[in-house]
Length: 85
Image (cartoon, rainbow, N blue to C red; front, side, top):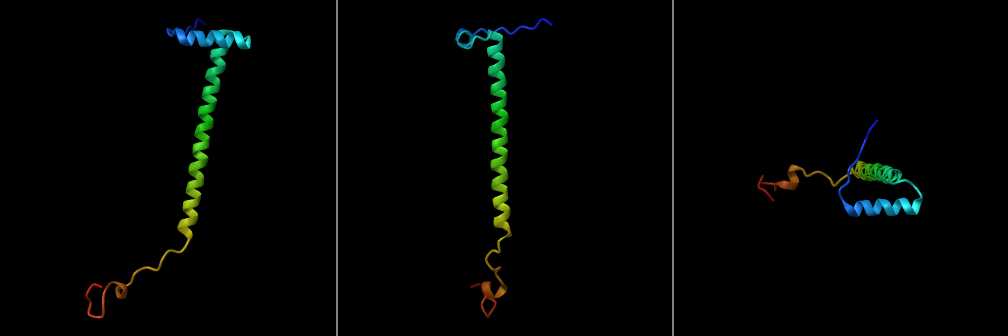
């Protein structure tokens, strides 16, 4: 399979070369590892956000089960003559 990726950014080329030299990996392996790590971190972030939302929803459920203030009745809203208080 003939696959190519043409990156026309000299800074990116320099970074890939430096990473390859420092790790002893090929430039292709450096790019592969970097992209795999990026994708894994995105998945981790998504799971962390999901856990955070789940915790917030659980707290809302707890708060919703607690009894609230008593409901207003007609006597609370109107006086003995039927006029608003």
